[in-house]
Image 1 (spheres, rainbow, N blue to C red):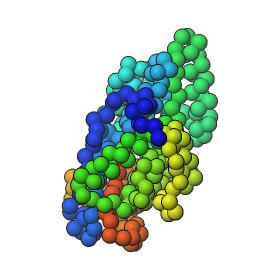
Image 2 (cartoon, helix red, strand yellow; image 1 turned 120 degrees about the horizontal axis):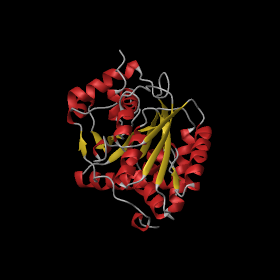
Image 3 (cartoon, rainbow, N blue to C red; image 1 turned 30 degrees about the vertical axis):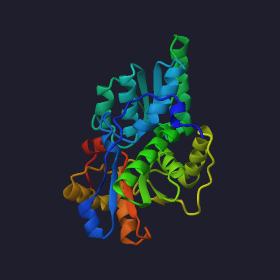
Length: 320
């Protein structure tokens, strides 16, 4: 197996991020509930995508790229983090974002501007069409002497998933230091790379992805994990029932779900932790609903991965 240190990596985040027990919720629900705070990674307003970008942008720099393209919804946390990381590295960032959800100058769109990104809002639903537009614009730039890096939505490539293997390793070390035996890990799934990294590196721990977007993630996540394993030259054969996807998109991608608001408020008012209404809020609400239904069997502890997205709180009102 190749070591992560064998792959190009540029240090962008402040790691390890905090890992601790949610005492009030643990007492309330009668089992150990822990949180991994990748929203506190030290870049912009934080998020798990920074781990992916450390590898993806390192490869881009090695290839001589000076311009970065990526995409997502109008309030994409991944896009804002890509803009922040590109700014750190002196690279130009061009964001081609779907004109869906909140497109006013609020939330992440404000941050995109602060980081100096060029933002283009597109009336397209197909990412294939957006990728074609990226390459059209990039082709013009390359004719002028630039070299472009094209990052797909969520940076969910094999190399991006390797980035979250670093997060999974961190979790394993922190859980061991705390004397915690994790049985289940839950995270939001909007493109699949984070869940793939967890699935690849944490055998014996069941991974649940809460889908906040539509897509065949039950197939995408294992595929990305397998591709990441190939990059690391390690075997990958997931155990039976090691991974499950639970749909909790609600009314649509980037649209808040009224039934999630009480869960967002519960975590804020008991633990002082902020969740956004379209990514982590949906994932946390989905996890708590599963917990109440007895979905997480056994006596081992439960971990929620806070993957970021706080800026959406300043763009989208919590529905009632």
